[in-house]
Amino acid sequence: MKKIRDKKAYILLSRRRFVKKQKRKKHRKLLIKQSYRDRIIEKRKKAFRKKVDKNKYENISTPSNFSIINNPGPTLSFFKILRDNMIKYNPVYVDMSSINQMTTDALVYFIGVLQQLKTKLKVLRLKGSYPKDKKIKSLMETSGFLNYFETTEDVQFDPNKNTFEIKSGNSVDRLTVKNICQFVMKKFEIQKSKTSMLYAIISEMMNNTKEHAYNSNENDYDNWIIFLRYYPNKKCIDFIFMDTGLGIPKTVHKKKDEKILKAISKIKSIGYSESKIVKSALEGEFRTKTRHKYRGKGLPKIYKCVKIGYLLKFNLFSNKACIVENREEDLSQEMNGTLYFWQLTKESVNAKDIN
Amino acid sequence: MQRISISEKFADAPGGRLRTDGDKSGEEFREDFLIPALNKLKKNEKLLVDLDGCYGFPPSFLEEIFGGLVRQFGIEKVRNYIDIKSEEEPLLLNEIDEYISDAVS
Image (cartoon, rainbow over all chains, first blue to last red; front, top):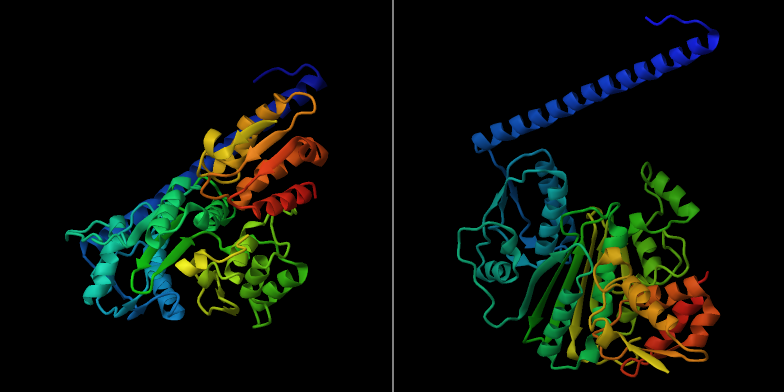
């Protein structure tokens, strides 16, 4: 112990002692917290190993009409069950054998869900079966869906090159967008200037994903996924673009009355509608969270292309919001992120006054 | 009049708004190409920004270039020293004009 000669020295010393004591206390708390966290992780790992050892896979069946666009309720319910099981580290077996109708938006969303889970979980244990229907199996193969999984079977590639394989990324991938434009130019035999609007739309979607869809930009996994397919008989190209971020209703600015309605809607069903919020953002209402008037130009531009008939059969799903061309409704089952579907034909890209 | 072509000098496939959004962004073009070109202008000389030859322009890219320039140097300077050429997509000029007007607010 130090000898204290005057009052000043005493105060100084007691202060130092107090700070040291606080530091030690803090450190001890941190150690306890860490050990608690380690124990939980170890516990989960043990539970996971136990389940894997026993080969007890949770069997989840896809709906026979596996499509978010045509059958949103059951398809989104399937993904919710899948996600819930995987978050609990349950090994999952996805039975796809019963699918007799499928659209690629469901496959794209499937990849998106897995990419998102990868950010949260270290291990994903997933097995599955192919659909019995040969056409659907072939679509699964040619879409590039299986590139995201390990498979023992030989994967067939599209001999006619009518598909632009599923691509994913986490920044504005201008070269992918350029390749997409070249694909469209080749299929429709059109000039570069006719795809400039498409270039703007896809790049803007990627940019929105990067800037608004996620809270943090430090996400190592892919944020957006795109797929397109050319139908030679109908002479059209179907596009699917999705991100598994927070979704438009959660990222746009909400008015005071909307915030109140949202809070009440959790207890009582009331007139709060996410699709109305998304629709108003599309129509150019001031909804950017940055609160700058010069931001938020992307979504109105996309919707303008729908209105003038450049983009056909436009579908937008974001959280509970569902916009199908001019109709809007709220889904009973929420989806994670945002999914766009649209179609292009040679006639639509030749539409005048596309700006 | 000095001329700067985005497709020749920068990229025929432009990227997003900010450098953090990916390569060849609007921010990159403004800071590394446009501002140095503006600084080299002689008295009463103008700079022609040529948009032709590109695959397309995301709205964020254009807003960051021209809107960003207004926020940095003021609307008058941008209108006095910059001309824009877009023969392939003439309606882009209206769009850019809107970005310039909205940039300050």
